[in-house]
Image 1 (cartoon, helix red, strand yellow):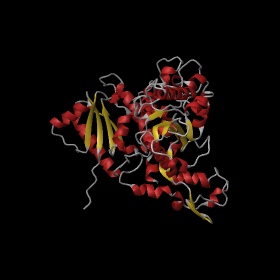
Image 2: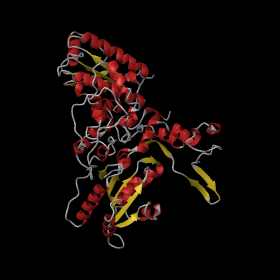
Image 3: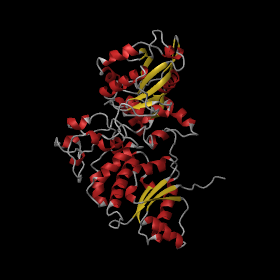
Image 4: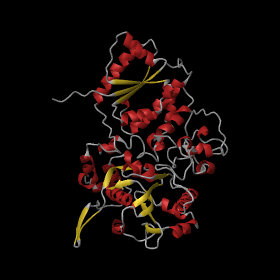
Amino acid sequence: MSTNGKPKFAMYWAASCGGCEIAVLNIHEKILDVDANFEVVFWPVAMDAKYKDVEAMEDGSILLTLFNGAIRNDENEHIAKLLRQKTKILVAFGSCANEGCMPALANLSPLHEIFDVAYHTISTDNPQGIHPEPHYTVPEGEISIPTLYPVVKTLDQVVDVDYYMPGCPPESHQIAAVIDLVIQVLQGRAELPPKGSVIGAGNSTVCDECKRTRNVKNIKEFKRIQEVMLDPQLCILEQGVICSGPATRSGCTALCPTAGAPCIGCYGPAADVLDFGARLMTAVASVIDSNDPTEIEHILDGIPDPAGMFYRFNLAGSVLHSSKSAWEGK
Amino acid sequence: MIEPFEPLIIGFTCNWCSYRAADMAGISRIKYPPNIRLIRLMCSGRLDPTFVLKALAGGADGVMVTGCHPGDCHYVDQNYKALRRFLLLKRTLTQLGVEPERLKLYWASAAEGIYLAQAITEFTEQVRTLGPLHWPRNGGFHEEGKELVAAAVNPVVALPQQPEEVKE
């Protein structure tokens, strides 16, 4: 137990954008409950702590760790393993840790191409062609930077995960509910769900939460969102704009379709769906209104980037994990 | 001596036409390569693209989807759904680096055992020409291939030096 008797809490970001931390702070005054019930021992975004402080802790001494971010390099993996060792309840928090999210779109390209774009194209002002060096000697000794892996991995491809909390980021009301639950468990008023459960989300699909009217879908042409004025009442997929609702887990209260934008699938695969992209492809292909192969191909031309569309959030967590060029490194 | 490459092909058949066609090939003593492992579904429309992905991730070098001829589906029009899913899946898989020649959709009626056997033979040879797919099974890594990781973690070493391309 900690010095002040409160159970310990940690939060870590691996390959992520920081949105998950903001979502945690978005629970507003509930954050005071976190402080009242937990001692925050490690949270790089919010407080100063060193890796060696974590290394010095006893195994299993942290009660709850929210781990957000995908595993992109050896530092991510090292900290994931370290926190696993020190933590009783490890939660894969947010889409990156669950299924790879945006960082995992890098799994479509080999590492040298990504590196080339980052350092040699217009994306970077780098006239001298300076590259990061994995190891560099300074007067004080040699310093190293983390080395990238050829493919981005999810947290549970690296360590054992207790609970999964999807979302990009997880909705604040869901975070608040989960924190409430953990506090109730601490007080002996509730029990934890079975290990491996998805927490802070629904068991249905976004379509189930969506209030738009649904009719029979017969799509003759797929359009991009900027090419069409969407009817505010009608199902978005029915209007020819691909909406990820049919494959995506509920829990967000269908925020995007309600606001007039298609669901992009950030809550990950719905319950019992093994491969998000496969489920979405099934749904999208079945609404195409044609039986003629040539016409179907023409309609499919309206989806210019199928892998990016169907695996926007899920590539690392998908059945194939990555593209061949990424794992081959060619 | 190196063993010749024998492709592993997963074939999905529908209960009412293509499985019967394979049966017909069997009882007529028509030979087709043993490389294909047939899995019977009630209908090609039952084919979830996940099945194809699992086959490829699980070691298959090619996947063949078969069903009733268009218009002949036992479930009216589900083979058209299979057709649309197949065409979309093929596009996605191409982007993921799976050659489209590793996938085949073929219609066979219950009487067309000889045609199905021919199609299986041709497809097997086609996949044989492409060579093994050898998709890594464990989170994007070859189980035996630690060197894959070692080669890729330090991209700086392997990169061509092209600083002059930086200018807009």
